[in-house]
Structures are given as structure tokens and as C-alpha cells.
Picture 1 (cartoon, rainbow, N blue to C red):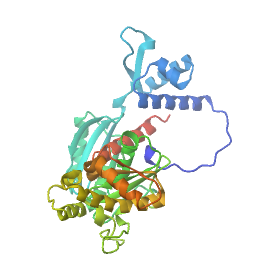
Picture 2 (cartoon, helix red, strand yellow):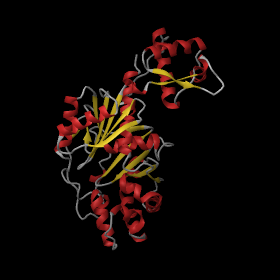
Picture 3 (cartoon, helix red, strand yellow):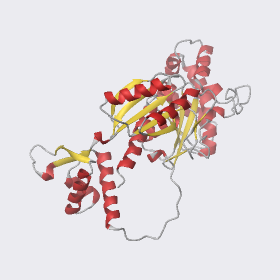
Picture 4 (tube, rainbow, N blue to C red):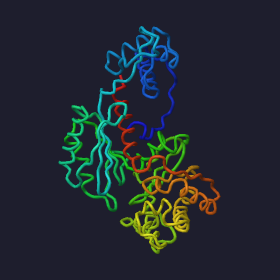
Amino acid sequence: MGAVTPAKVLTPAAPSPASPSTARAINDRLALRFLQEEGPLTATQLKAMTGLSRPSVADLVERLTHAGLIEVVGESGEQRRGPNARLYGIVAGRAYLAALDVRTDSATAVVADLLGRPLARAALPVDAVDEAVTRLEGLAREAGADRLHTVVVGAPGLVTPADGELRSTVGLPSWHRDLVAALQRRLPATVVVENETNLAALAEQRVGAAQDLDSFVLLWLGAGVGAAVVLDGRLRRGASGGAGEIGFLPVPGTGRLPSATDCGGGFHALAGRDAVASLAAGHGYTGPVEEAVAGAAGEAFTEALAERLALGAAAVAAVLDPGCLVLAGGLGHAGGAGLADAVARRLAGLTPVPMEVRATALGDPAVLAGARLAAREAAQADLFTP
């Protein structure tokens, strides 16, 4: 699914001269990438960025315009007029996308254009898959889309890298898999399912707290606990899609061990929402758990929570050495820099492996943001291929 799919390792072939058609395709993809990343550009700007000659850029613009991929969206400068001042941009309405954030008890959908800009948003009914698909179709019509090109679903659970299948895990409702099947059956679109934490990591890497990093681990703190591993700029899913199932990590302090069907004896028992609420109650605070993590439960609670989180973080540091941990999800966002700093202090005493700790820049919306990015990249990869 675009940039979130791990690349295969290939043996380099001996270089050979590119044919004219291949060279044109390469140039077209390069120009489209600049237009996607930088926004509308003039032909002169495209010439400077691509290094192509003026006639080559003119031919490129004509090809992409004729293909319906780019269009004139304005002019550059108030005083300039004429062909050289025209601003070209990607045709945002060439395709429409949908991003879904499916939790254990809720589902939210966003419809976006080819640039990934959100056009409409709505909650979907849960445990009623046909109604959910019908609502998504209606949402697409509200956004002006007669059909959806790509749909990316972010859901808890394991997604098998080989076939993209959502596998059942502890606490995963059956309607999740039914929803994915219904979307694939009823929509004339490419439907891709991805682990929600992986999508959050994609969003933090592109537009959030990890934009300057090639390697990091995102620790999702919400109703459950999960992790996403990004090393050398690439998301790592593992052989079965199970990389990051940190809730099952055996840690001290839970009183028992986890099992293949129960993460209650693992790290989840220390860092899941219910566990954090119980910890706050032990420190005399019974209000909303987000407020507790934000500081309302006091410094002693924050330090106790940081000690728990540092246990999981120390295991991550020892095995992966990612250099940075991003505390994400609703609780990571609530804790902010204060909780991140407290975890970093505790972590420094548990492992000799240095690891920075940062707070999320996006919070819960990171899943939808990541799904929109993944859908945009998948659709553009398809449409921009000659």
C-alpha cells in the first residue's frame, strides 16, 4: 500500500540505456512527485527542479494535462501573464479516497480527494456492516465523489503482510473482519486494511513528531497498548504482521505471565487504559483518565506511570535500539512532554542504550491521518503509473 509496504531486496541489474518511453515515464513521475510535495508549480519551476530542458518540460506538461492528471490552477505573481506564469497542480478530483479508523466500539470515516485533503467526515454504525458501507457510500456522494478509488481501513489486530488479511486477536470484534469483507464486496475500489498503530506511525513520520527521524518506535497508549516499528525509514511488520504486539510482552509487576490468548499478564496489564485508571485511583484520583495522565492525579502518579512505561520501553531499546520512542494515542497526547520526560528519566536508569522519548504531535487523529496518507500514496502510485 504505497510507502507503508516494505520493499523487497533486489539484486541490482547491469545498467542499460532507458528507452524514450521509459525516460518520459520517469520524468512524468518525477514532475508529479514535485507537484504533490511542493504544490502548484510553473513550467519554469518544474524545469529547475527536474533539470529538464524547456521543450521537454513543455511536452511533459502537455502529456500530463492530456492524461487528466494536472491542470492550470492559477498564475504566479500579480504582474506576470502568459504561458510561463501558469501554475500547474494535480487534478484533486481525479480520484476520491476514504480513510477509516475502526476501534473496538466505534468507527469513523473520512472522504478525501487525490491530494489527501479531507472533504467529509462521519461516524459509522458499529456491528452493522451493511449500514456502515451504505453510510460510507452516502458520505462519498456528499463529498462529490461518484465512486471511491482507494479505501484504507485502520483496525486493531494483526494484518498478514503476504495477503493483507485482518487476523482475529484478543478482544477484536468479529464485525471488523465482516466490515472489510463488505467493503471489498460492495465498493468498486481498492480496499486495504492496515494495523491502526502502523498508520499512526506513518502519520507521525510524515506530519508529526517523527518527521526528522529515520528510525523510531511508536508506543500507542489507549484502551489497549500497541507499538509500531520504523527502522531506516521503513515500517517493519514482521513475518506474520505481529511486530509491535507489545501488550503481550512479559514484564515484572503484573503478577502473572501473558498467554497466546490473553495479554492480561503482559505489558497491557500495566499500560492499558483500565490499568492506568486503576493506578490513578490508587493515588486518590477517580476522574477521567486523560486528565489524570495530563497531571491532575499529581506528580507521584506521573512518576509511577512513567516507571511502568519505561519497562516496556527498555525492552524495545534493548532489542531494536531505535533511538527514539514516541508516546502516542489519547493517553500519550494527554501526558505530553511532561510524561515523555518522566519516561526518559526512568528509562535512562534501566538500559545503557540511549533512547529519546517524545510526545505525539497528533494524538488519536493520527490513525485517520495515516490512513489518508496511505490511501493517497496508493491511489497516486496507481494513477501516476503510465
